[in-house]
Image 1 (tube, rainbow, N blue to C red):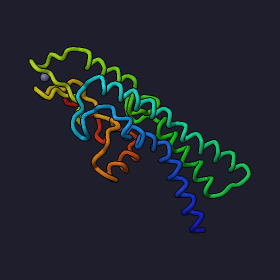
Image 2 (cartoon, helix red, strand yellow):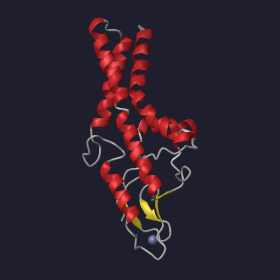
Image 3 (spheres, protein in one colour):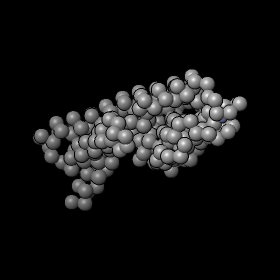
Length: 191
Ligand SMILES: [Zn+2]
């Protein structure tokens, strides 16, 4: 009985986090270096950032497949062999898909941290000449895009994970798996 419970939970956790693995690993490989500022410093709004956001968006979307495979396989095997392991796979994969479909803020479907709107806004900030001060230097800080020279806020949107190599060890990786690329802080309302 205990071993069945263990099998169920381990396969549940496996298929729940499997779709989040590509984002947690792929952009952080040496060959994928997007020429961004080192983690965790503010990232300047430049063409490298926009390219990286588009890449992360693709990886995030493609990793839906990693949830579909255990879902379909689990469903097929469950028809003939209803075991705890397969049931765990099935539930975990279903949970992974739901967590990405159900919107948390602003009713954006799917619930992606790399929405097209956001990438457009960042690109517009990049193209437009900021007029906050004489020497505008826009950078994406943890909670908002701000000018590093005069500290005025240009976009109050918390920074999602940018796929940079993290220096906060296993805790950072765990946080990444749990948050699925979403920022840890919620949007700040100060303008
Ligand atoms: Zn400024």
